[in-house]
Each structure stands twice: as C-alpha cells, then as structure tokens.
Amino acid sequence: MSIALKQVFNKDKTFRPKRKFEPGTQRFELHKRAQATLHSGVDLKAAVQLPRGEDQNDWVAVHVVDFFNRINLIYGTICEFCTERTCPVMSGGPKYEYRWQDDMKYKKPTALPAPQYMNLLMDWIEMQINNEDIFPTSVGVPFPKNFLQICKKILCRLFRVFVHVYIHHFDRIILIGAEAHVNTCYKHFYYFVTELNLIDRKELEPLKEMTTRLCH
Image 1: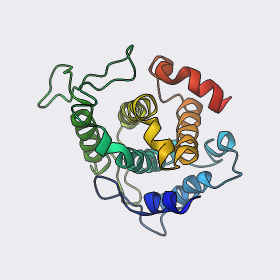
Image 2: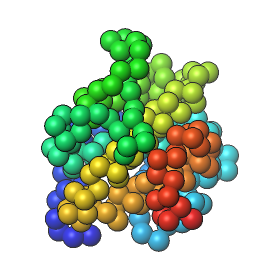
Image 3: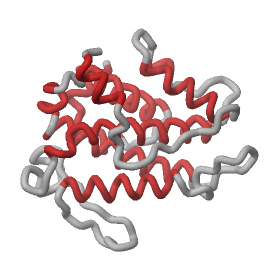
Image 4: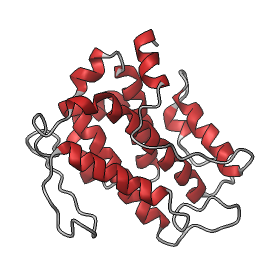
C-alpha cells in the first residue's frame, strides 16, 4: 500500500462515528473474523460463508456494520468531488437513477442531487444500526423478526454508493491509488450479499459487467 493510500485509509474520514462491537463478546469475535477477510491472500468467497454453529443474524449484523464503515470511508475520499454541480442527480450512468424515500420527510420517491442523497442514505443507515431494537448490543437480546428485511434494504442502499462511485468518480479513486482497496471491498461485499441472497439480482445490474471481470 502506498504512503498516500495509507494516509487516506488511516484517517477516520467517515462522516460519522464508527459503530463498534464490545471486546469479549461473540459479536466482537465475529467482527474480527469479518475484518480479517480484507487481508491479502484470503479467499473472499469462502470467507463470507456462515461459520459452522454461528447465528446468521449475528453474522449479518457484523458485516452490515463493517460495510457501512468501509463504504462510508470510500465515499469520504471522493465526497469533495461529488457536488450538486457535478452530480445533480443520484445516478449510476444514464440508465440508472436512484430516488430517495424514507417515509418521514420524503414519503414519495424524490429525485435529489447525489451528495444530498448520500447524506440522507448514511444518516438513515446510521439510525438503523444505532437502534438497539434493531441491532441489539446486549448479550441475549434477540434480533427483531424483520431484521433480515431491514438489512437487505441497508445493503441495497449501500450498493448504490458503489454504483455511483465506480461509474462517476472512479478516476479519483485511481488518482489516490485506492483502486485495489476499493475493488477488494467491493468483492467482499458482492460475495457476501450473493452468498446469503441479501440483494435482488436486478439491483446488481448497473455493475454487472465490472462484477463479471472482478468476481468471476
């Protein structure tokens, strides 16, 4: 890893505080195992498989939080170049446009500039993962019945960040020498969501050609 790249990824450039797991808990151990998959030489396809004897919700929870932190960091490296002028709509090329809906302020799908969409997206995900009723941190407290459905929505929205970054800002990623790191994060994400069927294949279409080159 280049010195410039180390500086980028060693700074906590996320928009918000990272959600962390308590040391000594089972979820912390799973978190460490998930984190280790970014080390060179790890077979990502095998690494995302649910470990024998582990709870699927725990495994999904630690990955959702990790992906949120990592993708937040990736977007943080290019966010100053993603402006209302450069990206007046949240899109992934000419064929795909994403509209924001959150059942609060935006009750209907609404076209927004990419940076505004991204901030709403990250705020919304942060609110979900910091909600103890959805992502309980106390040992023995069960996940809600709709936990996987919520995680699917989170992961679907995080995938849209990859779409926008790859299609509209990848020149910047290359410029700072972060291409290999971002590609590894993407492969890890892709293998995980497809292994556990957490994203509809239709949602993956915008990066289909690139994914075929990277992940097969």
